[in-house]
Every structure is written in structure tokens, then in C-alpha cells.
Image 1 (cartoon, rainbow, N blue to C red):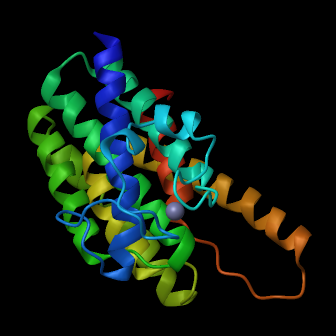
Image 2 (image 1 turned 180 degrees about the vertical axis):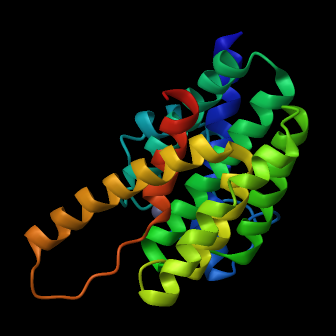
Length: 232
Ligand SMILES: [Zn+2]
């Protein structure tokens, strides 16, 4: 049974990675057939089996032999493990589905934020709908969940004093996440993400002192969310 969850997780994550690559470029990711990003050769089903194709082809395109990013493979592996973990954690089909969809959506946003420093509005809407869905299926208390919105509100007020401390997209994304998590978990999420952000910031500064860097926050937020849900 767990193997079935793992396989579905890898398939969905593989599709999610294509979304993360194509959405910022406004390319179609639903109808157009999968093709190599380098030689544009159409890929057959046996080139698209998650994890296995990557291993069999040793991380290279079958047609032009260009190296395929290992992120694709890691994303598929992550998707499989993530769906299994969601299932073991939630033990409820509706919650499992919602949690997996939420974490995968956050992974897509994290990849886009990492490469382009932007958060597509459409994905903020998807995140909001998924958080509302989880709020309903987990039967949470609306007053308690609304309290958690104090956290993004405080961060918003902070941006009025220090305009570049938080991006607008980061704050908009935090609202539904905090609403779903509630006050205590939202506080943990922010604390973990900020610690990860500081570590990443120190690493960047250590490597390159001469440039003014902006750090994408969604990758930290995504790791923070996973730890908050499954570990804390
Ligand atoms: Zn190719």
C-alpha cells in the first residue's frame, strides 16, 4: 500500500516540477507533450517514468545526451516520500490529499522563487484554497485560526518601518498558511524559517561580500512548514 502512495507521489511531483519550470515562462504545462528542454525532442512514456527513467538514463537525455537537472530526480523522490509521510501522519484520505497538495504547491513556489524571485498570484490562490480545504476537513476552530493572522499583520507593520524586510508575495502567502496552522504553529513556522533564512544569509555573505543580495524566502518557508507539520 505504501508503495502505491510512493508511486503516485513521484508522478505528481514530476508533473509539479514541469509546472515550476514552465509557469514563470508562461508555457503550457497541461496540453503540450513533454519534451527535452535542450533538444526539444518529444519524450516517450518510457522516458517519463519517475525516478526509474532518470536512473536508467544516468541523468542524461536519451536523444541529445544533455544532462538533466538532478533537481528533477530529487523532486520526484521527495514527492514519493512526502505522500507516504502525509499518509502515515494523517491516517485520513482527505487530510492526506490536502497536506500533500499544499506541500507540493509550496515546493513549486519555492523553486520559482529561488530562480525568479517571484511568487505567481495563481499559486497564492491555490495555496489559499488548499488551506481553507484543510481547515474544513480537519474541523478547526475559526476563532483560534483567525488569531494566527496577527502574525502576518505584525510582519506587515514591520515592513512599514523597514520597507524591504518582507516581500509582498511572502506576506500574502503567509496569511493562508498561518490561518491553517493556528497561532502556536505559525509562530514555530516563522521562527524556523527565519533561522534557516539567517543561515542561508550568512552562507551567501561568507561566499560573496561585495554584492547586495536578496534572499528568496519561500524555500525557507517550505522547509519550515514541513518541519512544523511533521516534526514539531
Ligand atoms: Zn535532449
